[in-house]
Amino acid sequence: MAKQKKAPRPKAQTPKGFRDYFGTEVTERAEMLNKIAEVYHRYGFDALESAAVETVEALGKFLPDVDRPNEGVFAWQEEDNDWLALRYDLTAPLARVYAQHRNDLPLPYRRYAMGPVWRNEKPGPGRYRQFYQCDADTVGSGSVAADAEICAMLADCLETVGIPRGDYVVRVNNRKVLNGVLETMGLNEDAQRDAVLRTIDKFDKVGEAGVRDLLGKGRLDASGAYIDGVGLTDDQAGPVIAFLTSKGDTAAQTIKNLKAAVGDSAIGAEGVAELEQIADLLDAGGYGPDRIEIDPSVVRGLGYYTGPVFEAELTFEILDEKGRKRQFGSVAGGGRYDDLVKRFTGQPVPATGVSIGVDRLLAALREKGRIGSDSHGPVVVTVMDRDRMGDYQAMVAELRAAGIRAEVYLGNPKNFGNQLKYADKRNAPVAVIEGGDEKASGVVQIKDLILGAKIAESASLEEWQDRPNQFEVPRSELVSKVREILESYR
Image (tube, rainbow, N blue to C red; front, top):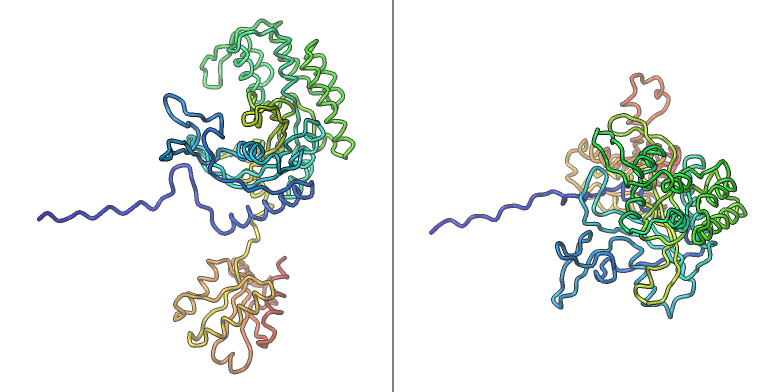
């Protein structure tokens, strides 16, 4: 009889495009989400936690196609032939929730939502298939005051999480203005209009001259390859260039330039008027151009947004993987989308909102050294006598009751050195030691592990010779001494 083969062991590795998050990373994200939620709540938005799974029909733009059903999402087919998918963002679920519960919700409905989303896309460096979003939206208000409020709230969020004024700017534009420019150009073919839109989207990469070339005959890219242009004449391309270069030194100058760029277009004039209102409202609220500015170069989701669009950009420089300086870039974006709920109700429902890229914002704060530098683990109570585990549990109970993070060493207590190695690996600030002699004398030893690490790293002990890193205190003073050490490092 042939010997039965053993089943191969599964590989211990994360799927491609996904990653695991450990202690400090999870804690930092939770703290950031709490800070952002406080701002959202202060502005009057209510929390919403919708299902992570939606029908593909509800997601809308990911309906099955001929070649690959549900491209872009992680989807599966139920026994009743319905297709379900993990949510791609937090906005499509909001549209479904509002349409489903609109008779029970206030109008306008102001909600915020936070959580993971999933995209079945090709992963790359820093680009994962699961990531966190942090959204706030107002559904049911067509007033540009709702858009201005979102921009102000976004600026407040950035400052609350640790991005100071001067290190960011929220830039605002309006899709209607761009529609007016296209109308002025007299483009009738959808293919040509789409080509112009794609070219406009490259403005931040190729600049005015590059866009001018791409709107015309074409240009050589950085690799030397020739990119065919849209084929417009200089006169046809003129309104696009005027639009993209209309940013002035003040909001008033930018508005004036945009009015000239849209010419006689009614929809363009409407968009410019909305930008002017937003600028006035923000100015009245104390949000000047050092925080929020009108910028025609902002182009987001051209087929998705119907009015004002906004983007938060971090303006400080970082070094890329090749050591070159570059700006950190966008960490949040959003705008007005008045047609999303209409898919469910058949009636137009105005809406506007913003999404903050939490992972990118965390990366920016780490880059600036504003988080992650002083994160400590729990106080570790060592075990000198396993028969006195009750005593050690009493110690951690007292520390925890006082609001101090603490744990008892639960490994093999035979080797005391291994316990201290464990405390180091846990990044513990303090170790508590109580052997038989200490127990008999009513004292405990408290070891300052932070100071001990500094002494170990120092080339000279002179700096630390007057500072002991281990203390013997009465057992009754355990909590007060541990707190004293922890507060000395805050």
